[in-house]
Image 1 (cartoon, rainbow, N blue to C red):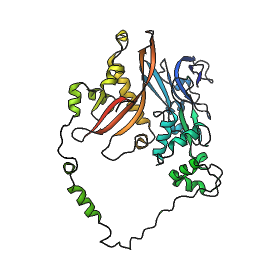
Image 2 (cartoon, rainbow, N blue to C red):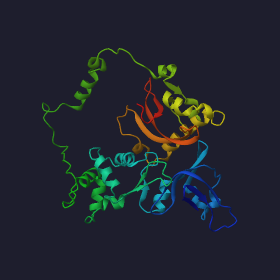
Image 3 (cartoon, helix red, strand yellow):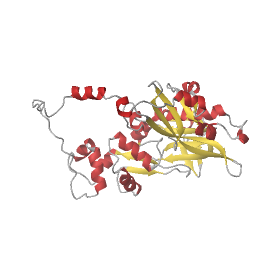
Length: 361
C-alpha cells in the first residue's frame, strides 16, 4: 500500500504485519481522485523493491522507480492506471499545468489551436465532463490533467452512435463545445466528394509534376540571395554557448549528439559553490539526462507529446528536473526547474538534441 498524507509518503502492507512500514518526506505527489492511487511522487528516501509493500505482488510491475537529485521518484504506468481505473488516463506527466496538458491532448486528437485557450478555461471551471484536474498534494508543482474519452464524447447524452461520430471528428467536436450552443446537435463537417474518373482541364490546373519542378528550380539562393554568415552548432560548442554532453547522454540511452545551453549548465547543472563536495556536476547532469530519457519513454505516444511540425523542423519536449539549490538565506532547498529538449537538424542535417531552460529559444 502506498499513501500520501501531510506531505509524507507511506509504504506498508496491510496483509503482512511483519513488513516494517516506512515513510519519507514527500516533495511532490499526485493522487487519482477516482481510484485513490498514487500516480506520481517524488520523495526524500529510497525503496529498493516495492513487492514487500504490495498486497498483490504483481502490482509492483505497475510502477517505475527512479532516483533523481538525491531523492526517488515513483510513477504509475498510465496503461495500468487506465486499466484499473476504467477510462481515466493521464494526459501527460511531462507537460504539467492545464495549458500544457491540453496542448498535448489537442495534438493527440488533431484538435486545432484556435479555441484551446477557451477550452482550457472551461476545463479549469469544471464545465466539461471527461477532464479532471489533479493538484499536487504537496503544493510544490503544477497540476496534471486526467482524461476520459467516453465521458467527454458522451457529453449531453447524444443519440445512438453520436459518440462514435464525435470521436471520428474530434476537432470539430471541440469547436462545437467551445461555441457553447448545445441546443443545436453536433454535426460533423461534410467532406467534399471527389470522383477520380473526372479529369480537370489541363489548362486550369497545373500537374503535381509541374509544381514540383517549379519548386526545385526556385532555389533558396534565388529567393534570399547569397548566404552572408552561418553560426554552426560546432562553433557554438567551441564558444561555450553550448556544452557537449554526448558521451554522458549515450550512457542515459540517448542516441543523438546532445548538448545543453550555457544558461542551464551554469545556472543549475554546475552546483553552487557552497554545495560542492555535497553535490557534484556529473550527478546533476545525469539527473537532467535521465529525466529527459524517462519522459520521452514514458509518453503514451511520443509523436503526440512532441510539437507537431514539418519533417525538417525542430521537435520540442517539455519536462522537469529537481535541483538542490540555495535559498536567499543560504539554506539548501529543492527547486523544480522547467526544461525543454529540442530535437532538430544539425550542421549536416543529422538529428541532434539540445536541452535548455524552458524560457530559452
